[in-house]
Amino acid sequence: MSGEAHTDVRLPIGALFAALGGIVMVYGILTAGDAAKYARSQGVNINLWWGAVMLAFGVVLLLLARRGRAGPAPRG
Image (cartoon, rainbow, N blue to C red):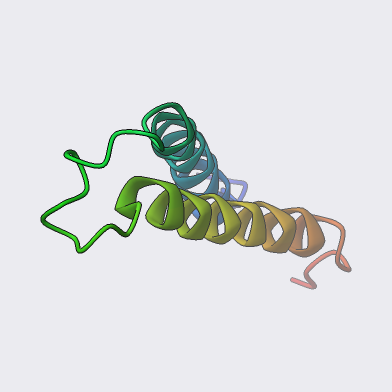
């Protein structure tokens, strides 16, 4: 291989977390009025909160991947 492959793993993982977090968060918003669904978690909308955490983590990874790509070219 003559050229180096610069694959940033933060890009696909960040996209995956952002997409899944968005889906879980939307599900939490749509089921927010169902008290029976969240009785086991003492009334806490777990889907909404963990969806927001996953979405935020995915966005951070995507921003870091973008920042890493815009950095200086490696010397070699």
